[in-house]
Image (cartoon, rainbow, N blue to C red; front, side):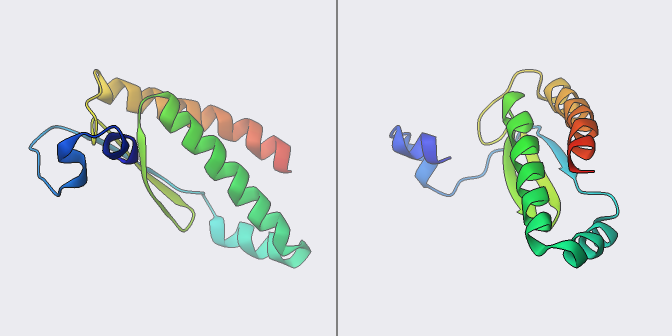
Amino acid sequence: VVQRIVSGESRAARLHVDNKLVTVVFSDIQDFTSITERLSKRNSRDLLFMLTRYFTIMSYIIEAYEGSVGEILGDGILSFWNTPTSVCRHQSKACLAALAMQQALKFLNAELD
C-alpha cells in the first residue's frame, strides 16, 4: 500500500472497497505457550530472537510468493494474496508459500534446538 501511495496511485490513499476473490493464510507457532515458558526460563532474549527469526523468514517467503503480510498477531501471521494488488494464480501461490513455510520451519527448528 505504501508503495502505491508513494508512486502516486490516486486510489491507494483513499478508503475504497473492491469485490474480488482473495486468498488468506493464517499460520501460528504450535505449542507457543510451552515454548515461551521454556525459553523465558533460560533467557528472555532467546524468545525475542526466536520470534524475530521466525517472522523474518516467514514474511520473506510470503512476499517471495507475491503475498502481503497483513498483520502479525502474537505468534501468528495473517497474510493475503490478490489484495491490495492483483496476483495471477493467487490460490496456487498461497499454497506454494504455505508449503515453503513448512519446509523452512524444519530448518528453523533444527537451528533453534
